[in-house]
Image (cartoon, rainbow, N blue to C red; front, side, top):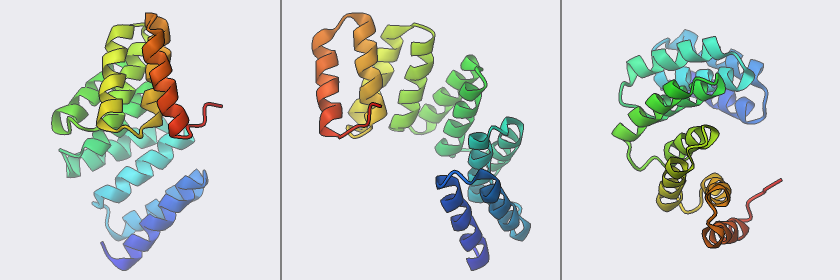
Amino acid sequence: MSSDLYSLNLKGIHLTDDGEYAKAVAAFTEALAINPDAGAVLFNRGEAKRLAGDFSGARADLERALEISPDAADIMHALGLLAYDNDEFDMALDWYDKTLAVAPGFAPAWNDKGVVFFRRESYREAYQCFSAAASLDPELGDAWFNLADTCDELGLPAERRKALDVLKKLHYDMS
């Protein structure tokens, strides 16, 4: 990545982190004027657009990034998040499965797959996904939080308490 491209990408990342999505998209767009095939920049702009609610723009950027890097688990995962944001749960599951096919240890994909199952009230499948996510990344607070909720739905009070204890140790913000 050229230094200008790198600087603009980094600027866009910081703006995204600050919730300044329009400014972030502008920085990423400027970077893409330097190199329209910069997959990382396309991914970052797609994520900024998704967070800003521009789902069609996000999909276009993420799909283009995936054309450039067809085995990129983070891009597949982002497409799953985008589908979930649009209540396209079957599509979200497909993207999470594709993510896990190339990166079976990608804990956030396991967690987000579990969220889809939880929303569908398929609590046993959700439990399996959240357990996998928590096992793969013991510091992934969202997985432990979701596991606690799922244990509550399944009537597993001892396991729920264990998950809540882990959350307490992680200083997880449950507000």
